[in-house]
Length: 587
Image 1 (spheres, helix red, strand yellow):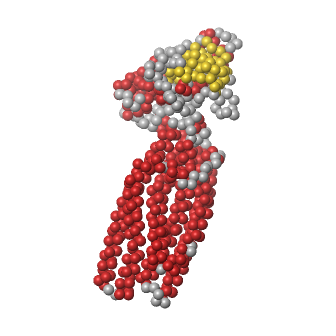
Image 2: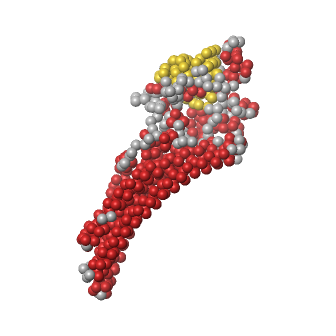
Image 3: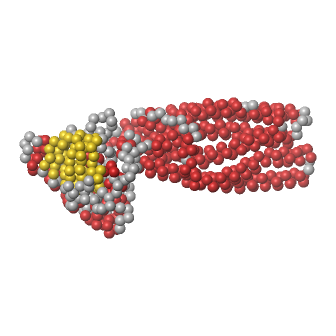
C-alpha cells in the first residue's frame, strides 16, 4: 500500500521551518537572548582553558615554580566554575523555552487539524496524523533545544579556536585548516541524501502507525474473521519496508560520520607530527604545543559537530515539511468572510433549492436537483436504496461538505453565510453508530455543553431514558465507558448519544436510523427517548428500515440522487407501482 503523503512532491524548505516558527519563538525572545549570552560566557571559558593550561604546563616543566603552579590551578578551577554556572543557565532557559514553543506548535497543529473538513480525514489515516503530532514534532523539538544551542556553541568554538590558533602558531594553523573545505563538502553532499532518507523513514512510520490504528479500531472485525495473522503480516511488511529505509539512512549517517571523523582527526595527527618537530627543534615549548593541540581539537570537534548538526538539520527539515504540510492544509468548508449569527431563537425551517453534490470534481453527482422544504417542527424521512444519497443530504445540512450547486437555507438564511458555530449549534445529530469518548458517562453527556449543571445533565439523561441504567451502575455518573464506549451496550451508547442531543437542545435534529442495530428491549427504550426528542423539533430522519418512518409527517423517496416520490407513509404505501411500495414489500 502506497503512502499518499510520500507520493506528493514536497517543497525544498531550506531555513523556512525556522522562519515559520518565528511567531511562536517571539514571546520567548528575551529568555533566548539571555541564554545565548550565557552560552557565549560558557564558550569563552572553554576557550580560556587551553591558554591557562599552557601557562600551567610551562610553570611545571619550564619554570618549575610551585607557587605559580598553585595559582594557575586555582584560576583554572574558577574558569570551570564560571563555565558550569553559565552552562546551567543557558541549558535551563533554552530547554524550558523550547518545551513551551513545541507544545504551542503541537497545540496549533491539533487545533488546525480538528477544524479541517471531513473530506481531509477521508484522505488521511489517523495513525499518520498522530505520528506527525508526536515523532515529527519531537524531531523539531530536538532542532530547537539542542541543534540551535550546539550550532551557536560550536560556531563560537570554531571562530574562537581559529583566532587563538593563529595567535599561538600561524604555521600550524594553516595545516589544521586545510581540511575544513573537505569536511564542509562532505556535510553538504551527505546532508541532502540524509534529509531525503529521513523524510522517507518518517513517512513509513506514519503509514505503519496508520495501519496499526486502523486494526486496533476494528479489533472485533479482525478477530471475528480470524485475521490476526494477516494483519500481523501486513504490519510486518510495513516494518520491513521501514527498516530497509532506516538502514539506508543509517548507512549514510555512518559513512558521513566516518569520513568526517577521519578527515578531522587526521589533521590532528598531522599537527602533532609538525608541532612535535618544532618542539624538538626548540622553536616551541611543550605547554604551547599542548595549548595549540587543544585549540586544534576544539576546531576539529567543532567542524565535526557542525557537520553532524547539518545532517540533523536535514532530518528535522524533513519532519518540518510534514508538519507544515498539515498546517498548510486548507479546509474545503470555510467560514464565511462576514459570518451571520442567529440573534433570535432558530425556528428550524430548512429549504433545499436545486441542490447537487459530488465528492470529487471528476466523479458524478451523488445527489442531483434536490428541492425540498421542511417546515419548523416537521419530521421528514428520507428513504431509498443504498447509495441513493440519503446520508449525503444529511451531511450537507451541517456543512460537513458544501453543495456543488444550489443552496440550503436555515430560517431563510443560506447556511454558507452562517458561522459554522452558529449553524452547527442549531443542529443535533444522532448517528446510527454513536461515538463516545473514553471518559465518564457524565463527561460524554456534557460534551454537548461542558458548562451544564448536574441537574441539567440529569434531566437530559432522564429524557433519553438513560438514567434507568446509569443509576444501576456502581459509579453511576463517574463510570468510565472505555474507548468509543466499549463498556456499554449498543442501546446504552445510543441513549447516551440521545441525552447529549437533549442537552444541546437544537432546533434541528438529524436522525440516522438510531434503532436499526438494537435488540427489542433496547429499541423500545430508544424509541421512547426519540419520541420525546423529536417533539417540536425539525427532524430529518434517514431511514434504512422502512418500518421506522411511521413517525414521519412526510416521506421523501430518493433514487439515484433524485427525489422520485413524496407523501405520507400511508399515501406512498398505497401506490402499488411506486418505489416506496416496492421497497416496503422487500423489507
